[in-house]
Length: 223
Length: 223
Image (tube, rainbow over all chains, first blue to last red; front, top):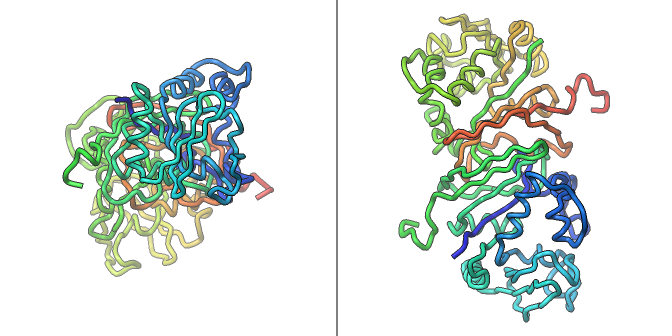
């Protein structure tokens, strides 16, 4: 079975998006600052169907994060950032007909829906049975590949709190954003121990990778 | 004139102390976890008047942070973590007769008081004229040395927001503390750009140092 991982760009003060996020402003005010480092990379551009871009250290890290994924899990609002289920059926969400995932994607929702097979290998599956079941299905679909918990922050928090995440990769952007959506917002009072497994300092970003030392909740009777 | 800097141990989720901090529990529940890496170092122990301890990379970083300081600025509650001014006069605060600073220390307070000269080179000065004036006095006293904004978090935030900090050094401890006192809590919506100037990965802690790119407020007419 693969690894369950989180991979996020975060400001030094812990934000993954700016304030006032909305359908028209999905990254929030100033939030695009957190992704500038990635927009110019060859691996990221290729995922969006674009040519060219920079290679090098940052690009290798992003390429690896893309390549390892066998399935994604994400919250409903990342799939479809309008007012909700499912006013825009047939799907007209932000991802277009050929989404950049190229794998099965499991969407957490309270509103069941038939799977949506898109171009380029992406199929959206809709899971109404909660985060554990969504992860189970993603792990089955991923085979030997890894499962990426894509977001948003609330979904990442739920998986981390439940002890279901093996690895947290953060790309720390050297800015204090000052306000917005935090990645880790009051996870609770049980500290979660990590072990840093990689550190790479590029000029525009600091890549930190951690293994979650606490066991998975399902293997830990004390929880 | 020296550098104005902040130097803090912080959890990966941004906390510098645990929840439920009090006079008896100044680091909050679980907060000592953030300082474990430093307690065993020779430089830190020497500052407390203790012999022995580990040398190496972490120790050199801490030694340098101690050596460079010509004066400290801190909040009233770091000086005297009881209910307040100045019930325990003569001073019976947490620092004892021979505090570890060995330099002038400027305490931000609304209650003026005569300076307190302690053993070992520490003199506490009490500043009622606000953060700018406290920093001015600290810079005068520090000479060619640097000024360290010691804390707490609210004091650090005030100085960062005012554009008065040149450098932020963080020792990121690989734990998600889940709750407590955040170092950077809603600084406001004007992003503050940084430049990473050092990255050192030790097994138990990640040392990150940043230069604040935004100019000081006093030099920036747009503020």
